[in-house]
Amino acid sequence: MVTPAVSSDRGESGAAWRVVVAAYFGVMVSFGSLLVFSFGTFLKPLTIEFGWTREAVSAAFGLGALTVAVCSPLLGRLLDRGVPRAVILPCMAIFGVGFASLGLLTRHLWQLYGTFILLGIVGNGSTQMGYSRAVSTWFVRRRGLALSLVMAGSATGAMIFPPLAQALITSAGWRNAYFILGGMVLILGLPLTALFVRERGGEHPTGKPAQSGVTVREGLRSRAFWLLIGTLFLGSLSVNGALTHLSPLLTDRGIGQQRAALVASALGFFSFGGRLVTGQLLDRFFGPRVGFCVLGATAAGILLLASAASTVSALVAAALIGLGMGAEADITPYLLTRYFGLKAFSTLYGFSWTAYAVAGALGPVLMGRAFDLTGSYASLLTLLAGSTVLCATLYLGLPGYPPNPFGATSTTPP
Image 1 (cartoon, rainbow, N blue to C red):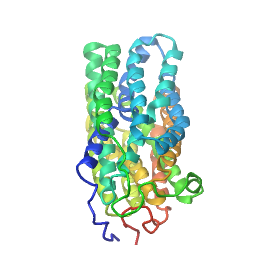
Image 2: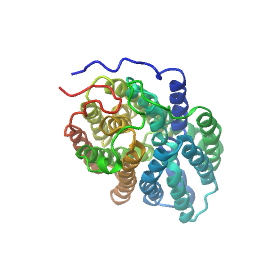
Image 3: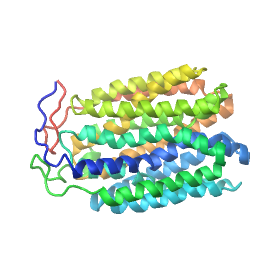
């Protein structure tokens, strides 16, 4: 059942939407977009250049993700206690320079691993985790839409960066591709964040304090929080495993590099649309049920990808995965604000990112290991599709929302 939302639009225009636009572009060039969606495109060039195995290169992604897991709660605490852009700007600067430095790689694996660890330390300060708190303070009635627009920056990156990285590698070499892409972070993300990203002071339009909500301790003791952790872990394991090996998986099956990049870009296109639709649905329907539906589409896409042998079937798989990819990204911060408020939002979001990142580290490594042992990804992808179904089912165990204590809308389950 959908009940009337808070009617006041005060604070949800002008400066509020400028924050959203700046956050959109910041997320587009962030760790969670640029590094994640270009990683698979660089995987084969690195293995060819240095003779490394796919598992060894995938381990770098895993190390970066594990570092994100360790550092996210601390970054969340800093975001809760300080000014968001005072955390975002240095993180983004270090990320841009660090990503560009991958163009200076040598045959020493420790250099690759060390760089990814550095990127992991600052990574989540540049992602939606860094921006979601600031955006959430400006919105009540359309919070789901606003957050989905921020997350759409990552989907835009998924559309742009695979073909762009492939084109740069083909025309300028993989080293120059790293230099150019790293420079985009500094040229695009930093100025917009510095100019426009800030929290809304005072009260929400409902009259509730902007910082109201539960404490970190209360949140960590909540059953709802741990169910969210479970959905994030299983969803991240599956999606990141499939995503980071998408390009080599397709080219192994005889699909050309440009078409493989097109499939990856199509995944980003459908992720963009899926995130916008998810945001609208969150403002109208009970969030856990929305999550169940969209993750069901992701599971179907991963299962199809296990056997996809043509560009058409790969595009259908990418479309299904993309439509559901926004679920854990959009729904988690929205549900955190609905269940727990904004007082400890970033810290709790940081803990949820720990679960997401640990699974994100395991997924690509498991995929690389499966290929190195069997020469195929098919069996593991089938298992990952099953884990995504379980992930979707966990959403149905979430309780109803608290009775509007944090300046949120009043959508509740029937």
